[in-house]
Image 1 (tube, helix red, strand yellow):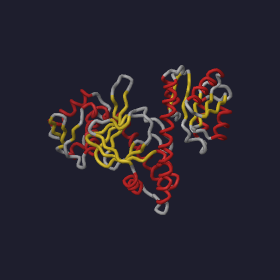
Image 2 (image 1 turned 60 degrees about the vertical axis):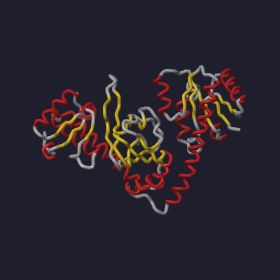
Image 3 (image 1 turned 90 degrees about the vertical axis):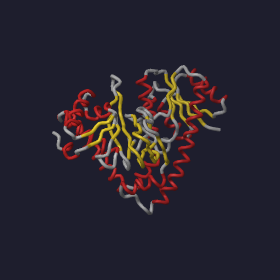
Image 4 (image 1 turned 60 degrees about the horizontal axis):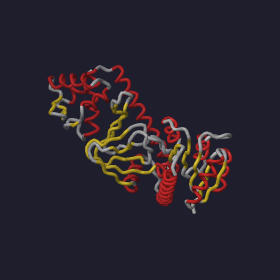
Length: 351
């Protein structure tokens, strides 16, 4: 019989919910606030925790924060049960790492379904952690010291994924369960602004790692990832990745350098968008897409004008005028959506 810890300050709701869960064949432990809830969780190690947000002593947000930082309780599934129904409240709860968010009033089916699915997920992740510990133990004699070692580990132990052209790999707001390595194809990441306009944030090519909103926590993605053409990936779960970092400190330093390089690239891109000429921005963006999508920059690329404009930081109409100008100068050739670089050196020299 699975044990549920119910943390709820409303006496009537607490008793009614506990009775409902007991009739569904769960063992229920109840407490009235976050402070006693934390002590109870540490003492009884329940299979799942259901917690209100607005409570005396310690609210639900702080309760989750403390439990998620404790090695003994951080893997226990956590469901918020709250009368706070605004989108920003739900988003805050999920961003903090809650497994689900149920608003009051709720139905019996809704609650039981959420519990069953989270228990099933927890069981799968527990098996994954067990298998990962065994795998990492077997590789401890061969410490992962570099990104190349890590990528080999992805190839040997990662889960394979295949996505067709324009398929969504993950959406903004989805929890980042995996870190991916691209084995074939290219991926673009984008965000949607307040006007509904798509803004391309990053491009990834074969042999790139992506999806790392956090290396240590299952935080929601802050952008949407889409396949450019057919894409093949291998993924390592955040849990497994975290354990790899804990056991391979030299690799952790390599990843810090990777993040530093990404940050520098992003700064340079922002400076270019802010101060570069339209022609320079357009030329740099064509080269960037060419290098990401093709093995040779002079090979034709098939990309939408809106994607090019988004990365360049210019209006689509402005970018089209620049492309037309490049074509007249014999720097590129355009056929439909295909752009072919004819004179790469001249394209690089545009200022």
